[in-house]
Figure 1 (cartoon, helix red, strand yellow):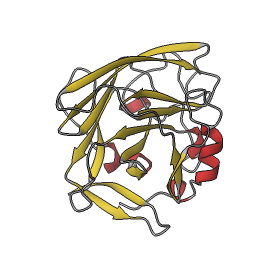
Figure 2 (cartoon, rainbow, N blue to C red; figure 1 turned 180 degrees about the vertical axis):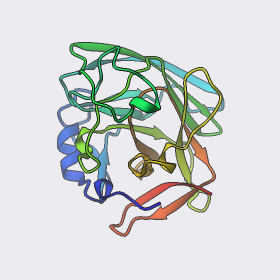
Figure 3 (tube, helix red, strand yellow; figure 1 turned 30 degrees about the horizontal axis):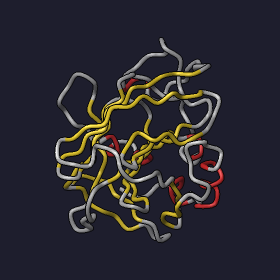
Length: 221
C-alpha cells in the first residue's frame, strides 16, 4: 500500500495556516514532517499512564475549521462543513455517500485512554463526515494520537477502528489508502477519519517510507 497523492502534497505552511485560525492553537504550530504540521498542545493531564483515561467534551462549530484538544496532546482537526446531519445514515455503506450538512454547534464527548503508552480515543457520538476528494486534505477530518515513549520504527504503528458496541478492530486503510496513518512530530500518529467511533493506535503495522521525506505507517503485516 503506497502513500496517496493527498498526503504527498500536504505542506506544513498550509496546515499551519489552517491551524492558526483555532483559538485552541498556540501561535506557532510545531512543524512535523515536510508534509504536515500539527498543534502542540500543553503537556500534562491524564491519559498518559497504563489504563488511565481522560473524559472531555468538544463543542464543534460546524462552520469553523479548527483543531480540538482531546487531552494528553492528542487532537482532532475538523474542517468547516464536514459533519453530516443526524439521519444521514451511518455505516460502511454510507461513508462515501453525499449528505445534508449539520449546522450550529455539536457537543461530542470523547474518552482518551492509554495502555502501555498506546492511546485510544472513543467518540461517544456516532457521526459521519461529508465526502471529500482524495487530494483535498484540507477538507478531511484528521485524528492525531500522542504515543508515549519512543516510536519503534521496526515494529511500526497504525490506527484501527472499532465499531460502536463491538470488540473488533478494523484496518480501514486495507481498503482505502487515504485512511493510512502517518507520523507527525512529537510522537503523534495521525490519520484521516470518515466517521467518529473508537480508534486505537495498534502495534504490528508495517512502516513505509515516503519518498518525499515524511513517514507513512499502514498495512498489516
